[in-house]
Image (cartoon, rainbow, N blue to C red; front, side, top):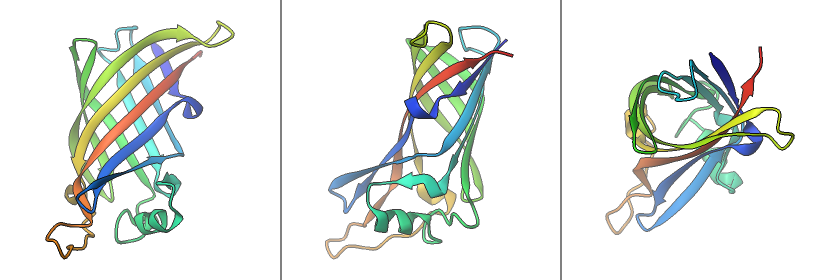
Length: 176
């Protein structure tokens, strides 16, 4: 049995969403933690859990970040975290399809993530084992009660409903 802890300094929990129907805004959560527990290095039976703090959201624009933390969107005062717990995984080509429950804004929904397995290596000292994964998926923010929007004069909306997840994880093996 191996336990891996997500290395926050070598991981990115990012997202993308269309803005004004023509451009894409990217962002990330800077404060998060998670673990992976697996019986072997295939990760086929991995138990994955993850939590991100809403107040750590960054889109590189303080005013927008403040709006995202407000009751119009995440309402970080009432719902301070987003969490994910994997329920199952299936091996495909060079990675996995992982199904799990994501909880955000007090709502839990099942999502599927495409996971590319980067492999297993060692840290720079050659001592600690590390593993890498790239994850992609999408969700509809409306499903989680994040409903704020404004209709544009041209007929579109300010913020798209579909949010694309773009996550890159390096985890270190924890010796017990």
